[in-house]
Structures are given as structure tokens and as C-alpha cells.
Image 1 (spheres, rainbow, N blue to C red):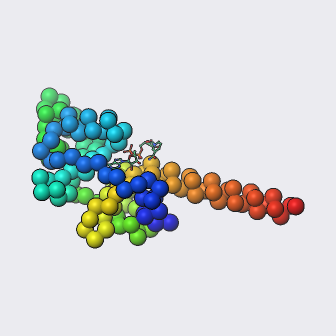
Image 2 (cartoon, helix red, strand yellow):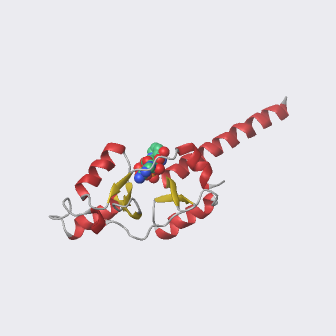
Image 3 (cartoon, rainbow, N blue to C red):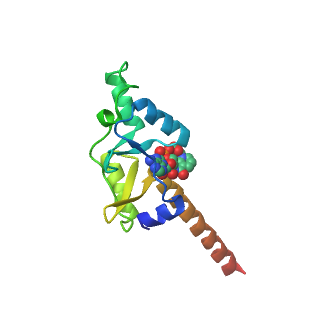
Length: 145
Ligand SMILES: NC(=O)c1ccc[n+]([C@@H]2O[C@H](COP(=O)([O-])OP(=O)(O)OC[C@H]3O[C@@H](n4cnc5c(N)ncnc54)[C@H](O)[C@@H]3O)[C@@H](O)[C@H]2O)c1
């Protein structure tokens, strides 16, 4: 199973925000789109980081008064961990587990082609195991006939 298999099921859409926007803007986008992370872009549309619910919680813990008006670029995570479509799913899971991150942008030839979350992986694996179970059940039933 590959990253591209999960992306195929989930779709290529990626939600992003400009680095100059505020944390309040990011929260609106989280709520509106029912997501927990945004890709952060510079004005030149270059990926410069990610901002997650957890980044905002960290800011809230240290600066509750300034949190909502803080700029995304001052709260975001600058080190962006990525995967490629041909990477094994196990590799993506390893990166998520080792780095305690729940989302991974998918990059192909330096171009952002999607984003997968821990929820997407679980959903995909659940579907795979349900298909496998169905196949095994019909195989066993067929064997009894
Ligand atoms: N991922 C799912 O399809 C799904 C379905 C039902 C319930 N849940 C539950 O919701 C919780 C969190 O889910 P999650 O881990 O998927 O995280 P999430 O809530 O951040 O993501 C929800 C969906 O939005 C997508 N998404 C998030 N940020 C995005 C972005 N910037 N651009 C494009 N797509 C983006 C994810 O890939 C996922 O498909 C978990 O408890 C999970 O079990 C997830």
C-alpha cells in the first residue's frame, strides 16, 4: 500500500493560508473546512510551513492575549515533513509516529499534490481490511458448498 492509494481515495484538494494572515483567520478556516491543519504559503506561493490546532494551543498557553491577532508565520511549524506518492504507507506512518504529527503534505517533483492525515490512513486501512474480510468470508462459504 502506497501514499498515492490513500490520496486517490481522499482526493487532491489542499487548504492553505498566507503567512501574513492571523491565527483568528486560521481558526476560521479550520472550522469552516472541518480540518486541523493548514499549509502556510509565502506571498510568492512557496510552502513555508504548516499551522495546526496544536501550534495554536502552544501559542495560547504562552501568550493568551496575543494569540488571536498573532501572524500565522510567527506561530507555524517551519520544519515541514513530507512524503511522496510512491512512498510506502508504512513509511508515512513511521514519520507520523516518530515526529508526533498527524498530517503530511504529499510532494511530487517539488510540487504539492495533496495532503494525508492519520484519519485518512485509518479510514483507508479499515476499508482494505473490510474488503479482505468480505473476500475471506465468501471464500470460506464457497469452500463449504
Ligand atoms: N480523515 C477522515 O476521513 C475522518 C473521517 C471521520 C472521522 N475522522 C476523525 O476526525 C479526527 C481527525 O481526523 P484527521 O486525522 O483526518 O484530521 P483532520 O480533521 O485534520 O482531517 C480531516 C480531513 O481533512 C483533510 N485535511 C486536513 N487538513 C487539510 C488541508 N490543509 N488540506 C486538505 N485536506 C486537509 C484530511 O486529509 C482529512 O481527510 C480523528 O478523530 C478521526 O478519526 C476522520
